[in-house]
Length: 451
Image (cartoon, rainbow, N blue to C red; front, side, top):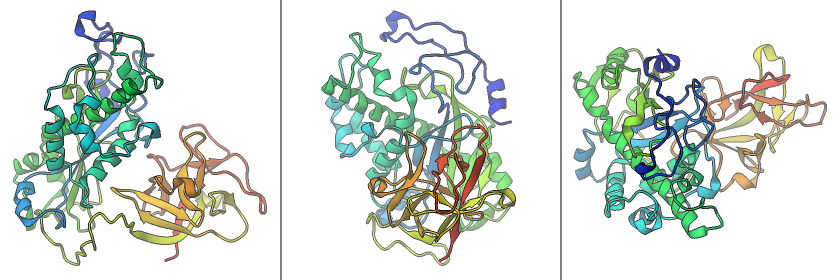
């Protein structure tokens, strides 16, 4: 039972409005429909999370020795997973990323969170005076990066995923004010709304992480870290499911066939968790897929600090150097070779000429970056054009790469299209396909690795 089963299993809610005594001037239904349900139309985008109605709470099991964790700290982490992030996915399993650069964190977010005057207003629900301090303490403990710079992971997760949570936009926060809507023209108050959204994203992520104790879920079934003991895939799946309302939980194994990541899928039973700061609105559902990279048996669950055979530690912590995965070309790929050609160094489709060199790099915190001599590659947010130029050098777009097939995808979808067929040296734009409309020239992009 996957998404539709979850929708059928969880009840729908009556449509009524928030009482004025609640402290909010927001005219939203008290009980909105379950996210990803279209039974009731909620026109107000501040009241219903759409299109990102699925939320993934993701956790790491980073067992490899880390240069930023002294040996004496290993004991603290030996019985705990750490937080990766909270991701809003679309109802079809695709996802948006880096949705609003105007709200990107490009400053010291730790200092911001510790200074509550930056995100507290008399018209917003009051926070305890030590809320920021407690949150930062939790994040420093449980939201760990494997590059030695925890704050870089926090910033990445918010910029990539937090800016895509519809109901956390400043315009929605301004609805809670008793006065007129706060706009960007009111710079000081508007900036407080932006930063309150940042605080809430981190706060809700931490609270949901604490609710989902993966280590204990596995330990209850005698699945414990070991240098030698191995486990069956079905036993791991059963243990995780039992702790998550009997729903299927996604887990991932690394190249050593060892558990290293867990994804918990949720829907929302209210329009947004920020209205009541309530993690109970997250309702468990089955993951879209059960696992990745894990064999049916012989799965390792290595203890923290263990060095697998042939382990090569990184050279230095947090140096920002990207690992190059290979050099090759990007080719047009269709069933039975109906369309042919390659991409130029600017990201255009051609059928004749010399293939451009594309370099594939490990992206920070997951996925991959693409680069040509013109610069890093990205997808233009205004028109979905694939392009490679210097404007993406500061914040390269993250793509997904299937190592077995070579297929490059973006935001959970791997189809691209062009509006015309290139002829001779005439080039065609490459456009990311973000819907199910049929296109005449539709294809996938395949990385053809040369070395």
